[in-house]
Image 1: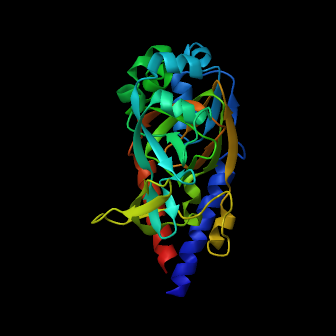
Image 2: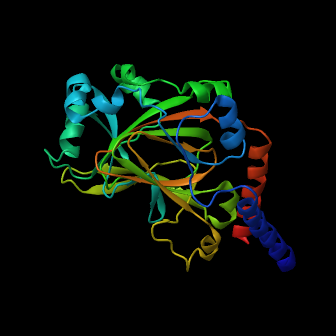
Image 3: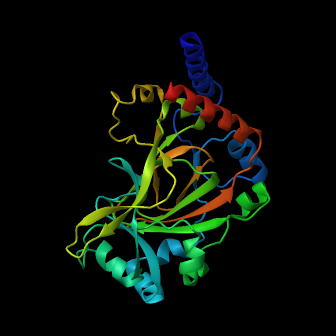
Length: 315
């Protein structure tokens, strides 16, 4: 049994090493203009490689319009869903729980008061609801941008499943996870800081099962963690790439994260199944487009690697 386990571990390590040698970049490259649909599919979507694209949405009025004054006037009275947490970590491991944020309904103006520090808010506020919230909660802003990326829609032969709006405080952090989407992430103002890890490094990324729970703010401003009764346990990544516990998760030493900063006017192509961790400058505004991935042989291979990684981790 030990020999078989060692053989599987060796194969998984060689798998990751070979991916880096064959096709992965050591840094996230820049494109100075959007590519043709065919070129983008051939050079980036097919190989499953990230890139940052400049000059891809210079024509959006949002780039020069979306400041606090304009947003107050345009959508200040609109009520939207805001994630509130005590530390800025939403949808993340907290102790022995996977804890989701308190979802608070508030007007856009009230949120801006907190972000602009005109009003002190107990907790960390972040608009991060990933259910096409731009289209559902803030349709008044859609005139200021495109509701899909034409060359991406043509490359994939489909429209995005969701268009999401993001705005929050600098302390708001998105913990490491992966998505089953081809993601185009457009920064309108400020900047976003990404840590990216390829799917081929899955063997080095720990997953554990956690009781799901939700933050709930008490009347005195403190937060409690309330279990989701009867809910199945959630598999999540307990490791913080900003401060990895290498004694507990020594295999993470073998991962090769890429770091990049996406600035206002730039678009990150974040391929499906890439692990990512996200921070931002205070008040950063972004919009992202989620295109459903193709569940083809690449997904099939990833599922095999994930299954083997999970089996090795349990032994």
